Image (cartoon, rainbow, N blue to C red; front, side, top):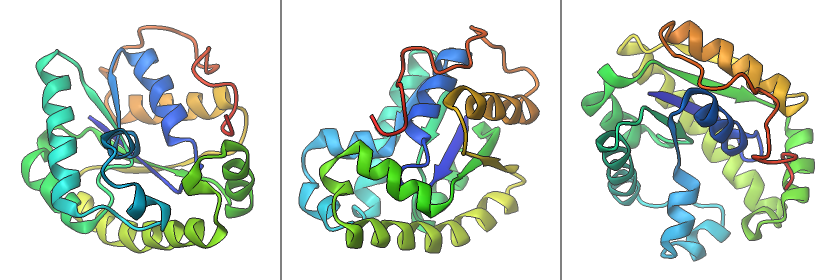
Length: 197
């Protein structure tokens, strides 16, 4: 299991899908799971977080399903809070190969989010609130992972999609030398043409 962290617009979704194709794993996005549930649009539009217990239930169900179908898992943006991280390290620490933080300057993130055009990306105040929440939470999440000897890598998320994917593949294989590539394509394929689409 790999955990992908990063601010909104950092490319977690795009890169999670790319890694899932390369390694034959299942990418599970907490944002996608929340949005597809249709229950939390008012909270999301204000840039706030969904209650931890709801997120844990949603993600636990998705992870259990993926594992039952024989897939290793890439978690996109989960855990998001200290409480979620405590759940993860209590119940799944032995399954986690490592965590990766995709680092992208905020100036570029604003540009990517403007291109992406999702409803929750339109208000600068909402975006800034999401950035602030992420930065506060990552400071409490990382010590919990490190206390369980889960390695954490910081990866430069700037550049062509395939270039960034290559950096992530290298990080994954450092965490788990037995991770076998199913494909040699690290150029993003037809997954997504840009971070803004």
